[in-house]
Image (cartoon, protein in one colour):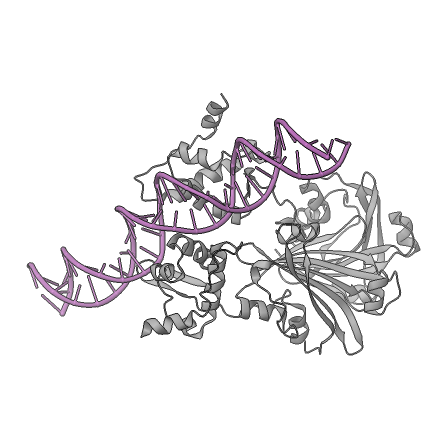
Length: 252
Length: 252
DNA sequence: TATGTTCTTTTGTTCAGACATTATACAAAC
DNA sequence: GTTTGTATAATGTCTGAACAAAAGAACATA
């Protein structure tokens, strides 16, 4: 009965022994299909090698030739004495990595809250003027957000927007920030230049984030640029270090 | 005559059939040595598979198991009907923001010092075993380095190396680490998976880095992977936050 | 209760051999 | 001379089989 089910599942056990396509590639294809099957994504073990071998009429060695690659790609996880199953998706870091924070969270299915949102108009100080490449004293918008999960806030964001963008201060900042930028202002961020360091919580941050003074805080400053290398936003984030780790993949 | 030469070249045809290290890994090691040989780098074909098989007393299948990976890493080029040779080295890739730390510094013309270097052999704990994908308790090398500028150390590094690499502990760790890995071990890092967070200095770190206890410390954990997605090194760095900021460009 | 001990299941490693496919060189045919 | 076969050499694919090693379960023992 479970046997029948399995055979059913293997819809494309259509191995063509006469095809010029090597068998191991055909097997790989079939396995990739299986990997997409929700049943296997949910942790069910793949048919064991000997079974696959029998069912497909292909030697176990050839089966392994195919699975080897998939294991290397970290799509499958094999465990000696146990079995083979589909690897949990590496959610985050993939594309996300650098999308806006709320999108990051959203993509991971984490429910996200704004505890405070405040918009104000300020004059650029030295730091801001350097980062956003505007003259000191230039008027621009400052957005402050205290954000976190149900159990409380864990990050305090300050954003400054380049005047060129034309932020009015009346935007709905409950929406994803980069959504607003892309769709309302046709401003597409393509580069994020980040500086990360560690500081101790001062009184202000301690209160906002609900931690003792002098707790460890992860500070991320970043300037986001458009395709013409013009700065869009200067963003400073203060993260509770006990609740947040900054993850990133760097390829070369 | 040419036969004799070849046998000479294969200095380490020391296959140990009783070793717990799988034969295909031993073969891989030998091949990496061959890749180092200038003769082969100049385009000479490697011994053909059947010969290798005979000489090492190992089946051709197992030889291929090893070469497969090296081909995947683009260190070897196999051509059906022709032979196998060492691939031309890729041009020194853009030493973008992720080369090793000393290289980074070096490129910026900053003079760099090692205050302490210590190598030891340890057993993998849970964390290490997860990060490096080895079994808990497995023996491997731990490298500790206290590094900084003339005015004192500002980072404490701990590195763990995957046993597969074959670190002996006798390397000259004054050299750039990734130089050693690439040129001595033909292990090319292509991906760095990093986790950055903030902590407070404990007694140990405070002494090493010359800061008060409970100072802000930037902690970077990273696992560096080879082209086959196998972990090479697990590295933990503790930076004086008052002297170091982590900078990175993220493009999309 | 805790701790070994043994058995079973499943992947990991290795082997020896067969035949396919591709590239090359050389010879034969046009 | 150019093309076309043919032999040879090398890697590519595939098989069937055996045993090793790890994980887990069931069981026994202290």
